[in-house]
Image (cartoon, rainbow, N blue to C red; front, side, top):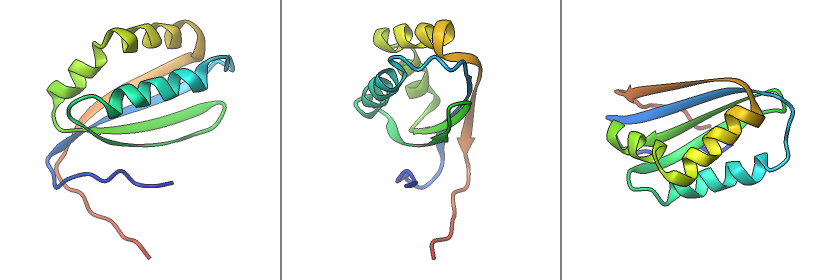
Length: 107
């Protein structure tokens, strides 16, 4: 896994945790589409994601809460969100947090 290259805080994290239904047709393509939309959206800083067939967690980083809200309302993103609720996810939880501190270790 690679870490997102984020600036000095403060910035925002959008944390998307999801439990999957097992329906995977088009899931990878839709995930890639959302990632490309995010990469091209103003305010996007990066993403870190992990998961398996049952559960996944993606943390995307943003300059501000406003940029997260604007991304959520993109027409193509809204279509994929609906498909996720209808097809891909048993449940999900979205959390938005302001990052105040950022530190780490690298051997």
